[in-house]
Figure 1 (cartoon, one colour):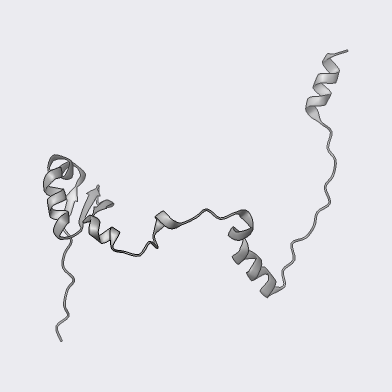
Figure 2: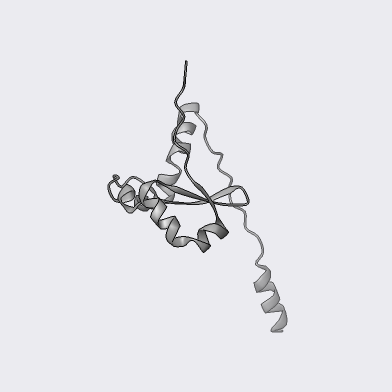
Length: 106
């Protein structure tokens, strides 16, 4: 049984992409272009229509969560397992700055 391989995405180095930027942009019109630095993927250049035609579900539409929303999965899991965060009574500590200030004024 023969398996079909996905088409290879051209790989560029940062230096080559910098030297041949116009060629990189031209090639990106046809298919995505990957740019690598020391064998690590650093960027992908794509045709703008690939981004515009896509529904806005990427990073650009992520709204920052407040603390309550961000901890919701943790609270849900804690409620499932019956975990209750123990309450520790606050204790008063001497104010070191106040000690220094009142000690110097005398």
